[in-house]
Amino acid sequence: MTIKELFAPSDMTVGKPWEKIVAFTIPMLIGNIAQQLYNTVDSIVIGKYVGDNALAAVGSASPILNLLLVLFVGISVGAGVMVSQYFGAKQRKELSMTIGNCVTLTAISSIIIMILGAVLSRPLLEMLKTPDSIIDWCTSYLVILMVGCAGSAYYNILCGILRGLGDSISALIYLLVATVINIVLDIVFVSQFHMGVAGVAYATVIAQAISAVLCMWRLMRMTDIFDFRPKYLKMKKQYSMEIIRLGLPSGITQAIFSMAMVIVQSLTNSFGEMVIAANVIIMRVDGFAMMPNFSFGTAMTTYAGQNVGARRMDRVEQGAKQGTLIAVGTSTTITLLIVIFGHHLMGIFTNTTELVTLSANMMKILAVGYIAMAITQSLSGVMRGAGDTMTPMWISMVVTVVIRVPLAYGLAFLTRTPELPNGRYQVLWISMLVSWCMGALLTLIFYKKGNWKKKALTGSSSEK
Image (cartoon, rainbow, N blue to C red; front, side):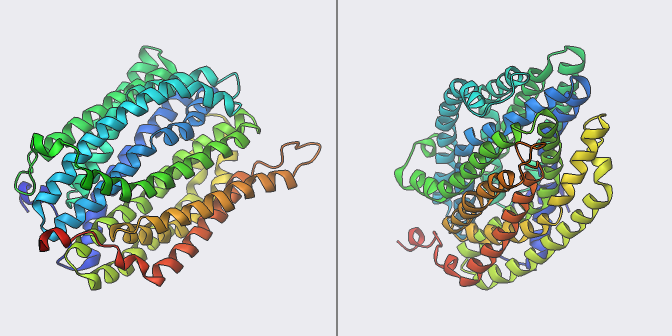
């Protein structure tokens, strides 16, 4: 295989479905793991060089960070669905207009988030009763990331476009470069310049900006597939509204999930700095454990989108079955590794023995949930690729708003004792496990119903 062939977009409407899905997923999985390293390296450097309270500060800021970035999630998902379907249908003009409108929408969204983030970070942290010992660090971390959010926004959205075109290699290469830069800057800013929490935030912003520039450079060279000209950057109602229509449910889903995390973070804060720090470590390991599921989910979105665009519904269903089985097998392996080696994983983040033990024990509660999430992510990816982004949104709302949050607070209330006035901290992770399992069951039911098959976008333009 030549370098040109390696970087060529993948046509997923031909060949064995499982081979196409796996070949597309592997580089994207490596890329997602590398992206997760951003937050993980931040946590390791902060935990080792500054202390457990600083580690808790970074973790407490994460739910608010995710909440403020939901606009970009929506644009990215809408872009990926439209690009994959237009690419599969070989509709060049529509593909060009979609990509141009995404670039402009991202610029507008970045400005909005920069302003909101700078203004709302401190008030949101105070509303969540963030401990006084870490609130200044949390605020500093959040404000820097919000003001520098354009790099992250463009990287994620341009990656969504590249993946919709079947190119998961380019995003991987650029992200690996940015990850190395991030790691080096983390160590230099924190250990050499003693910049603390602000140092890891600056390192992340710089690294993400570099990855965004590289993605843009790659897109501008793909003139054999679409046209990247100034006229396509002009907002067109038909395309921008379609991006928003498709992406909004995913954005709302992420917003709901982030709001739930913010609400649960308030409960987490009530258990003190040790539990907060343990939650940070668990979520960092969770990020890696969940990467295969997210990667298969995104791969299934691209696969389904291209085949729906090409009117190959038989291949969509065949690939959905094969891809989901592979995802479940992968998550089962990860679950076993977490149970066996969890204690060693937690020791990477901190030297505090009590914190390592606490984190490892709680991680075991979540372990089996990754198998359930493999089903949820894969089949939700198929539905989104077909243009049905509403069903996954409703499922997410039910399992998060109706199950996860009430269950966490309800169990905390029921387990209160004189010695534990806020209840048992284990409820934080038990409620998450239950919500994941229910989400898998609901996703499987709605996938089997098949209403998602009627949501294709393409065809009208080419028939005129």
